[in-house]
Length: 68
Image (cartoon, rainbow, N blue to C red; front, side, top):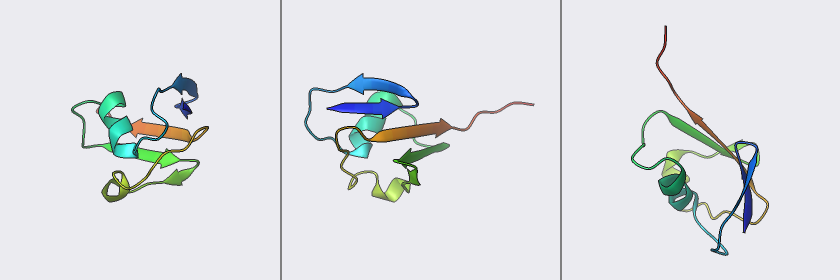
């Protein structure tokens, strides 16, 4: 399966993964301050486990940072 994550193509052996699984690989240990959009649609965290990603999906992961 090929996914575009933050404008970079990545390949996965699995034919289908949930958004929750992907987030465990892409942002391990992070659960707060993250927003995710799949194909330009924001997916609430409560729906990550039930959102199955398809080949060629585009995922945008935004992480809040502190600064000043």
